[in-house]
Length: 151
Image 1: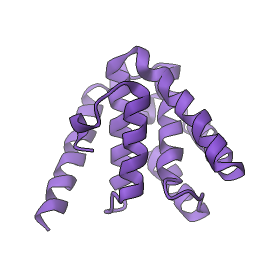
Image 2: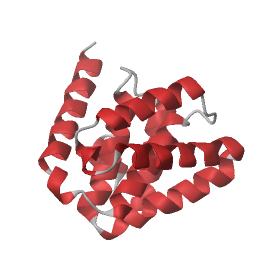
Image 3: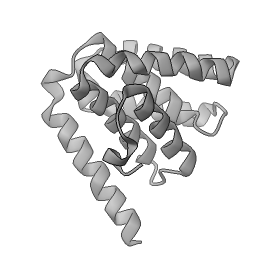
Image 4: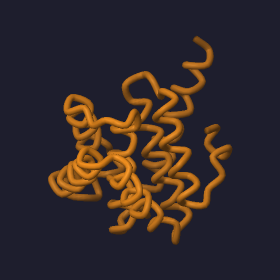
């Protein structure tokens, strides 16, 4: 139980950090990388479950940091990335990692993308090993050491 409490506190801290940086997170590359990250986390087990993507889309709509962007546009992008993963998971994952890597130019945004992935992954109360692995892969794409986020 203590481990879960620690993770929950860490996720809350990350969300608070994101909210504090909200005004700096307005670029198109952050928007696109965040939606790609959300799709990657939603399909981390290698499949795209419609119920899970709907839940993630709802989390996107309610995330304070992402309110810098039009909700419908975010969801359209998210579902576009999810559809890429559903059509061909391996090819879709390569394309999504390329999209995530575009945020590498601004390290604050890159770290925020990782934090979005962790917050979305843990929103259901279970940041499972596949979700952790997906976020860890994104860390490598962004040139960030996964250990910085205890991954």
